[in-house]
Each structure stands twice: as structure tokens, then as C-alpha cells.
Length: 275
Image 1 (cartoon, rainbow, N blue to C red):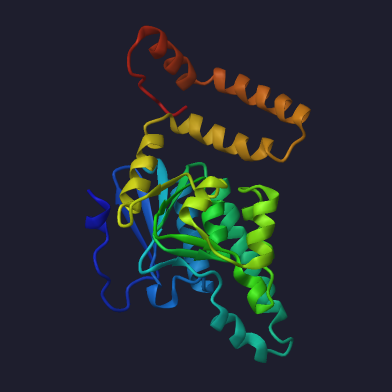
Image 2: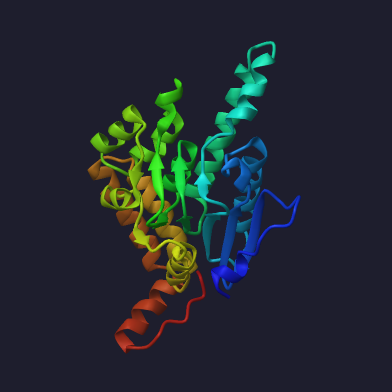
């Protein structure tokens, strides 16, 4: 099934997060186009719940995260946040709740035992840029752009900074954070924020195709490797090698490694059992 077939126009009152299955790929689509797919409290919760469900679904081998409308995601829902200024504490407790909930959802992407590919068709700003940076892989339309413009409204993009600074070099991250100026899809690719840039309108199919490539691999090996990648990246060199050697040893004992190596030697396709 093509992405275009999945992308039917929405009737009124449809969910703020759409979920479709394309083969072994779960396609999650942000569906608040009128609000530029901003991350409301409800959408954060829906995304987190969907990721939790997918984590335990053995029929799903990868995830594509897309969006409807001209914008991929404009960050937090500022109208929703501002409405809580009238609380007795001027919104402090609610702001903390939202920021922590959003941070937990972003970490759920990183901790998901399956790869997540962002399909970015338009602008991704602030927490929207954070969402792209939190995904394992990203495919962007030539029309996409990325920015952390919180500084322009007196709200530094501190939580987006966490994911951004783990994707791109320090100087480029600081320039985005301090100026708030958007970078093009081509620039985003050159600094490592996205993997591929494709013609506008083809990004969703390209993201699904990339996810399908990974879905052909052993799910056990992908799970082990993804977890190890993020864990070792926070370690010093000696600890990272020590940890990676332990992971490689565990991986060598797996049935799929035995099968995969045997298939390579015997020049045949492997038959994965995902264990």
C-alpha cells in the first residue's frame, strides 16, 4: 500500500493521532493540521500511548512518524500553555507537568526497541524539531525547514536543545538555539539532523521504504543494537568499548547471529527467528 493511499483526507472530529499499518510498519500521523500539529497535552499523551503499544507488538518491526497539513510540528501548544497563566501559581505546576510529559514521550522514542523514522514534509520548530531529532532516522522533503525559535519569544528551547545537541555539532546547535533562524532541509542533512532529502510529496513513501529496509533485519539484533547505540554514546571511550564488547558477546550467542553468519558463509538468505 502506498503512503498516498494511507493519507486520505480527514473527516471532521477525527483523532489527533492517526495510526495505520503498512506491512510491518506502523505509520503514526500527527493530525492537528489547523494547529500546525502543535504538541498539545492530548497529542503528547496519544503519542506516548501509541509508542507503548507498538513496543509490545511483535507484528510491528519499525515506525514512521509523519504529519498532515503544511507543517510537521510547530512545537508546544502555546495557547494551551498560556491559558494556565490564570492558575493560582501562574501555571508553574502545569508547565512542569507538560514539559516532563513531553520529555518522557521523546525518551519513549529513543527507548522503543524498534527504529523510528521521521517523515518531515514541512516546518519543524521547537519541540517539533526536538521530535525529529529524537527519532532514529529522518527523511525530509525539500520543502521542510527546521528551527528552535524559542529565543524570539523569550522562551529558550531548553528541552529541544537536549535532542538537538545530541544530533548536530555544538556550533551549529548553538547557532540554531541563539538565533532562532530556520535551516533548510539541505542544511539539516549536512549537519546530521536528517538522513535524506527527497522531492516534496515523496517523503512519506521514502520514509516507509527506509523503515522497510530495517524491518528486513532481525528484530532481536535491531533492538539490541539500538539500545547499545544510545547507551554507549553517553560513556567515555574505554567504558563504551567495554560495554560494546559485552553486547557483541551476547549478540554472538543469539540464534539469529548464528543463522545470519551461517547464511553469509553459505551464500543464502537468512531466516530470522528474532531471538
